[in-house]
Amino acid sequence: MTLSFVEELQVLIRQWKVTSIYGLSGSLIAVFSLAVLYEFMSSYHSYLDLPAGKKYVTREPSRRKRIQDHLLRTVSYLLSTIAGYLLMLVISTWHVWLIVSIVTGSGFGYFLSNPLYTWYRSKESGDDQRNNNDYRNRTKRTLGQRERKSPS
Image (cartoon, rainbow, N blue to C red; front, side, top):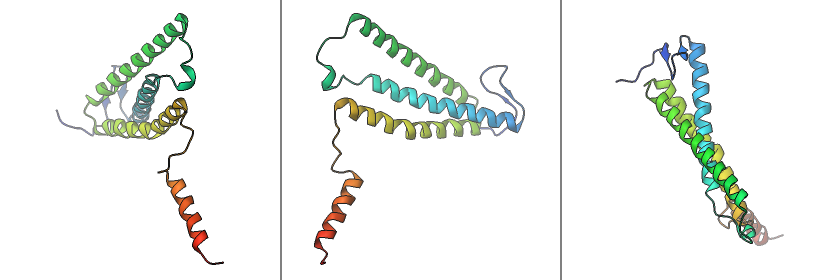
């Protein structure tokens, strides 16, 4: 198999036939959105795997809460797996623009979802203090030191 640039192709199912440039651009948008959704689902699945923060360890959750939590994790995993397999099937069409759309959608989804996941992780663990290596803190400290050293 070789990579192709053809305008007419069948994407996943028989009814999803691309016959024009408008159909191809719509397919690119749909595949891009699916890749972004897959990255958000992956981050959400990672968020669900976080241990409970210090605030929430006070008592054991009820049986109903554990069942709801398990069902939520199962549905999250199921949707993530389905989206991953659909993206894999789209890649198996060997169409260059669809592959580029998946790669850019995955990158964009990671770009958007990873900061949210990091923020929720720090919120859950109770880390409300800023990191000393943060760029904004270093800039403020540097500016403050310069102002003190300058003669008035």
